Image (cartoon, rainbow, N blue to C red; front, side):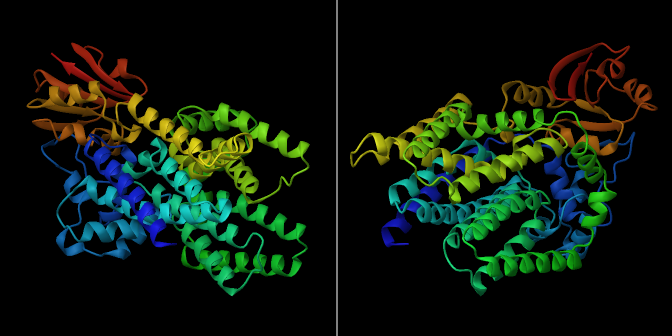
Length: 494
């Protein structure tokens, strides 16, 4: 990149970093998977915390030793590896996350996770700029694309969500960039080396990377076939196969996760079921549209059709890297929408860059075709800035994983100085209430057997439960529902 480009890309990175930190300060609660994140990376000996039913806790309580790195367990990568072997995810992200936490033993902070995501954000935007430049040959359009993606709710939500998804995005962008570099060029040793490294590290980050890489690599293979590059296709296939063998050699636990683990069995069962073939994909695209393009996916779909019709009429080439990327992202959402344990934008975060970039490219091309003006390229930039800012403003400058809701904030304030009882079937369900319990004077975990006995010892307390049948939990109690989120219920018991 030229010096001018470095400065402008650096300015976008700084802007996105500032937005990320701002949204990080507004993060007031955690998804239960974020609590798992700390425990899987830092707890030694078990993937669940040692929580005693009936025991009264305060402060971090049982979460302290579970989520924090103890002084004598710093850089204990054997423990991380073993934890992931017993969990349902590959280990690469957790090894890095544990390293960061190890520099701050006996402490907990959301910033350990957000800082790691900001680190990946820097490289994501640099690679995305290079990818866009390879496609557009335009500094304005390339800068507009990283600005549109970097300020989108979906990407900012990815950064404040303390999980492996920002790292997942990085390898997804890296693979797309590599394939674009060699789309019309001869494959060499450097290509095969980077392809192998990205595939292995991507699969060590998240199993869904296999789905994404499969579709985009198949499109790349089709392009090789169309170019009659059969020798390069054969070599690429051998490299991919060897990468798979190497991956299995270092992480053979994937077999247990896919065929014996509960998530693997669930995914396979849903994949082969006949129901909901397209509903999951539709719901996932709707969630993605809301966060990526302010709900404007249908509008951009019409723009894509318009450009396609225009190209067909003018007998222009339709098959290119951009169409391959769009097809790969759509097919990914179709499959993941079918097999995901539930519908959430997190499962499509790695494709958001593709949808936003394609949307930007289509709008930019239509405008520049219709308006022959030197300022035409600025139109798409302005439109996408309006989309990003409008999406943030209408969300009161929060993203979903900030959990910055007025009712939730009021509930936490109400819990100050009060005792709390957490009625859950499994102790780890209490993860849902981690941040809330820090506001309580004390808290006690109970199950159905001992609940009534503990209730009798409390007065004017908060009752928190994660259940499908809340009425059964509060039966016989003078309980007032204060707040509800999914299957999590917060009651004030008088």
